[in-house]
Length: 258
Image (tube, rainbow, N blue to C red; front, side):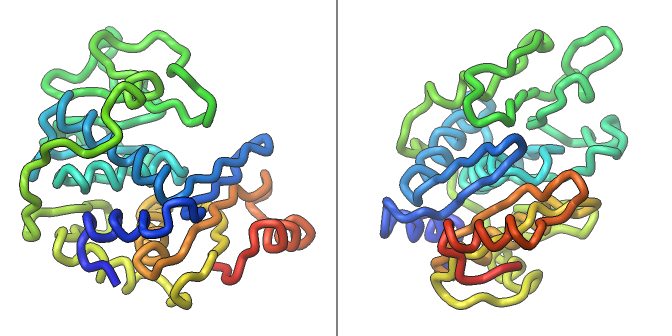
């Protein structure tokens, strides 16, 4: 079982074509990422963080992205760069969340700009378009904002230079507390019910405070156990009807549910 984030990413490519992350979003959107494709996304995004923003141990990356497959990619890339991911609730005060922040990764850039529409002084802003086929954010952005949809694809498929990871540095902080890199995978196991090694696990997208942190713990735990994640957006009423659930279990060959 992997014990570090780089070894976890390496393990995902031992069977490069095997599905590791499948997403069912709004409007019937379905995205499937094999281990190789998922790590490729993470590598490109890591290179963006390092080359564009000098991300390294001690760099603070703030995000208010919702529970989503892109959020998982950005989290893994932040950690691959050795940086600190600060997860904030989308109802919190942006001014307070920016304390000590170096980069903000968001699907709602207007929330983080000043009244005159400019970026917060001293903080880089990355706008993430959530739809899978988006080639740009599709809206006017504050000057200097990085449009992730177009920028990520310009970076290399293999991670370039990254500073050595410091196991004592904070990997994750949220309203639930802080987690150091050395404890990240053990922390994920402590947050969720166990699954069998190799399980293909269906998870309904969590909601409410702490939803992103819950998703991060679930995904890390499943991948560390050589499993794969089927992440499903519930219906508008927040439920997965039995008929829809049964179809997903059959078509995706699900072996466990959380």
